[in-house]
Image (tube, rainbow over all chains, first blue to last red; front, side):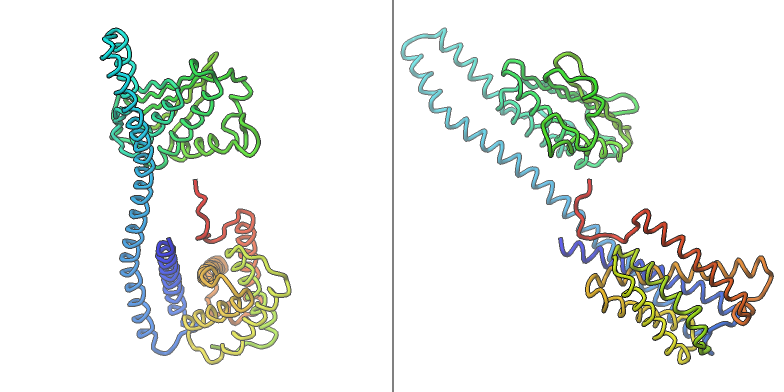
Length: 284
Length: 158
């Protein structure tokens, strides 16, 4: 991080000095033409000056390259962090399943021994559904988004939330960077999970849809929730506004800011027992 | 360069250093008391006043002036050397650009040569006042819109 700041500072310093020298150079030329405040041999001054400006500009190229390398490394580091979180989550799930597997095997063996085949079939069916949760589901075309969605879906499933994921297209033409897109989806999905957890288990539902029109990519995230009043919906993107209590209410505000920063649009709708957030981004 | 008289020092150099100091501090986002601002302005302008007769080039004069400004402000603030450095250089660019633009405008509209602006005290005063007014307007814009130079410690970007 310190290196990044150092490079950034160097770039700023070099640029400021370049601008300063260029300004002086131009103004000095005006003064030369009027023979004001000039040494006797101005040519040597101009030569040194010109060389210095060229040198600074050439050095600027290397420094900016170095800076971009730092930014790239920083980006990769963040990406690895997301991957690591997801791997830990998956690892926990696998360990949980392995722990249960022995118990399952014992029960299957017991049912087989007792020749209770109907019960055994029911049990295996239920077991099959449980293991489905570990199947990789997501393929949006953006690995960062896949990881995030996989992670959030697993989290929701473990909290006994029914999840419906529909991806009808692949993202291959979107201008927004994956980090911003992840911030948006992550905030919306966290909110959806929090909202559904307030309901009874059989009413918990989250739907994630992704599709495209000729002009836009559209993401919708819907979830079951308690009935939201109209004035709550109208204020939902306001800073510090929250239905979850004080010192909250930054998530959706930040989401809206990021969406607008990327020329997108976000809307919210509510009907009876569910709320739907729709995010649209123009294709690049 | 021509030696300034004490009257010229108090009419031109000192107010010039004062507005430059205020502008630099605004760009830095630093707030210090008026006594310190006046002290910085006085020390810088007086140093420039003393050194000026020994420098025969505009370029060298600007370099020396900026160097004195950086050292004096840093001695008063005792921190933020990089920010002070950037602000001094930027302010210097802005100031001399405004000065150049101002003189060119006067030369164009009043149809007088640059030499007259330097030699004729009333035209010089007029040019100086308009320049100070422009700098004050720019300073107010910087202050109002909080145009401080980059804060490298701020990572709370959205």
